[in-house]
Length: 187
Image (cartoon, rainbow, N blue to C red; front, side, top):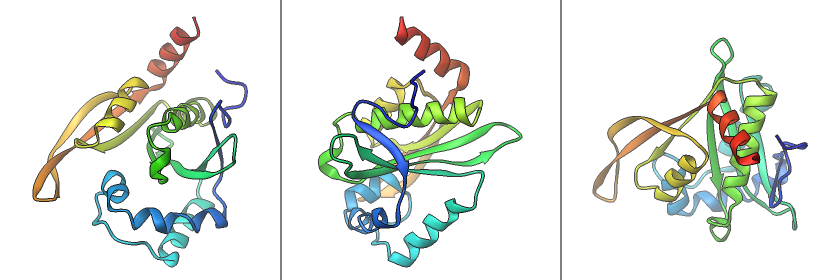
């Protein structure tokens, strides 16, 4: 496991700051971003809506929110959540958003998720991390599989976009699977 779970070669996970919130409304003005990240209708987010979302993480011990920033320039390019933790079962949800379109596909999501998984499994001592993804988000599905997530379920015809229905897929990763994967990669 890495010495500093918050810093990798390309990205660092940091506290999401008030000034970072100022970039997020532009991301939600991009329909593509909204359709990749959320089942809700694509709609601009107000400062008030983002403030409420941000505040929901501040006093919670079952949700953790990180800004994703580039190591070289410290640019805020997205965020990652470990949330809705059920401590008695040691289960949590994971969500990632790379908001800057020109930063997608550059390995930032992969490195950020590795860091978040190390945080979830080794800092929070979770047993299981899960997430959902829409079936049309092929790059995200490939990324989750690359990290060792297993597809565990399908919410059939869950979402209706652009005149078509799409499934929502459930993926899960267990701590022992992550440990086995990271041990095998270190050899």
